[in-house]
Length: 327
Ligand code: PBG
Ligand code: ZN
Image (cartoon, protein in one colour):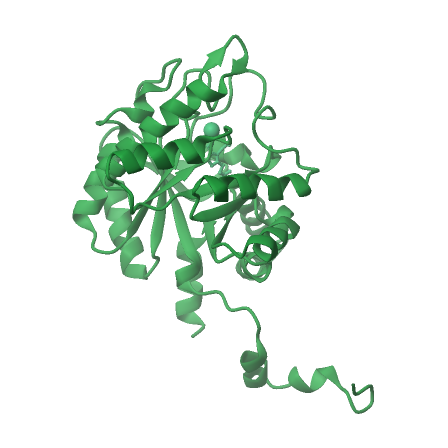
């Protein structure tokens, strides 16, 4: 192998066209999944305090938004619902006429090829804000899994293209796959939030989804931030149970995990650049402490470089604008 002065790594960096040719990772529109928050009502468009540029929208507004997203060339959205009524068992989550079920039907009617992914969990629908049903302060696993399976089936019945369980209960992928198959939804993929950490980066999301837990936290089901081997065990269980796509969440602080999961399983791998990651870049950008657009692209390129095939990001529309301007 050549060494300096024969070898000069800078040779490929002087000319911008050469740089373009040797670039190893290229972000494209096809990589993007855009999260949306649906609330009851009409003509509602409330900006989320901690997430500038992100809104809670009523169904009519979300449908318009989805048409725009489709026109921009973003392939998919993921929906989160805030019901008008919350209860102990999160009934709104598996109600045929729940906020998500209605949204999916409306969006599918008004768009052509936009993929509608639905988040499956109970925390947006329970009065206590926990991801499952409780006995005292304990989240019951198997009882919750049954409800999640019902929720997933009701999303599929409404027309969802992909189901994305985010709850981190044990055995839910198998249960959801079985329940959907029994109803004939054998062709609907499951994108599993397989590796979801108990993270401080979800703060702004809980403003957007009004889903902060009334007491305690999510450490009895979400993963310990310090663990890496365990992430592989989580991915393996979900793959064995029938997950089609594996997600790592958050993304930016867990690039090592994205890399390990991709290396080990070679599965289609998604990463979620979560609300806190977005909020930090936005806040620093607004203060002119960083160049927002540059850091947006850098953070997303890093996630893709680590091995993500698709990225859930609140920046999706901004990325498209950037890509269209910098062709
Ligand atoms: C619901 C859910 C959460 C997120 C996605 N689905 C919040 C949580 O677990 O508290 C977080 C997404 C984000 O922060 O952008 N289980
Ligand atoms: Zn949850």
